[in-house]
Amino acid sequence: MTLLSKQEQEQVAAAITAVERETDAEVVTVLTAQADNYAYIPLLWAGIIALLVPGIINYLTSWLSADVLLLSQWGVFALLSLVFRIPGINRRLIPRSVGYWRASNLARRQFLEQNLHHTAGATGMLIFVSEAERYVEILVDRGISERIGNDAWEDIIAAFTKQVKQGETLTGFISCIEDCGKHLKAKVPATHQKDELPNHLVILS
Image: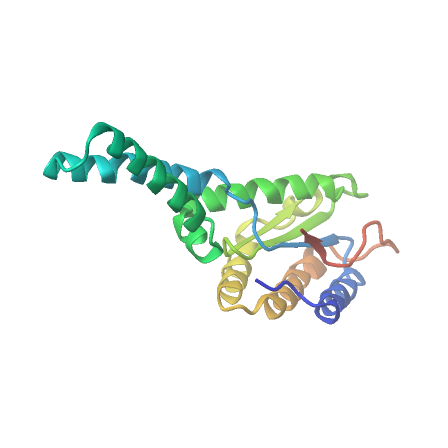
């Protein structure tokens, strides 16, 4: 999975700069390839299958001795543990609810780590994207939430999520920033010169 190039990141930064000229909001964008490595998921599935499949085969056929059954379970576990680490397979094993929970948790950590809760007037906004989970979230501090309801972001998030699924992350970022800017300009207009937080796209490794 390829994250945005340097030139594409500069386009995101330019879009943020343009929006912040017309609003007191401080917009920060964060992009990650995956919210978690989910290291336990392959082991969990491999363990379940290794316990069940050789046991069921032996129960139905009685072909395996106790020693062979145990070795078969170990072998199946070791093999599947490796196979299930292949990225394309690994992603299919992760329950959607688990992926969303991990991504949501990371988004909230980033809101704090990027100091969006310390802006003047409490006008921090985070646009967070995790590509593997196809997850997009917009988080705002109270200076924005008191003037703009969460329902204002729902259509923007839905459109951006669709673009991430289609591999159009850059286009999604630009459109999302511009659409958010329309709400921010109307409800949180610029009243003073400021630039408290960096405008560049934060990419998590």
